[in-house]
Length: 135
Image (cartoon, rainbow, N blue to C red):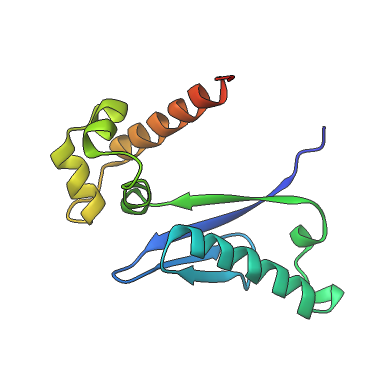
């Protein structure tokens, strides 16, 4: 099976909205009031870039099949999932206490690399567990 090219999109939370850009494709930017709006904006930006540029001005990665990978910072992830997971649930998933998670979500403190990795691994583990469930 052919491995698809990946467009790496960085999503960041600012004081009043989310912004995003493609790390490996020049000219792809987006934004919105939520992560979902921002993702939609990025996908629209990619389509507009393909639609309104001549063939030679379209980045090679967009001329074949690709998939979009989203990278978010810790505050963005925690705020995005705030409506789904309580701090108590996140504590159980990650092993990081609620107060510390709140500091990370608010941007009051930045997690060390090890803590960021712990959060990412907890989300991936949960995702894999959910994918293995059949109803």
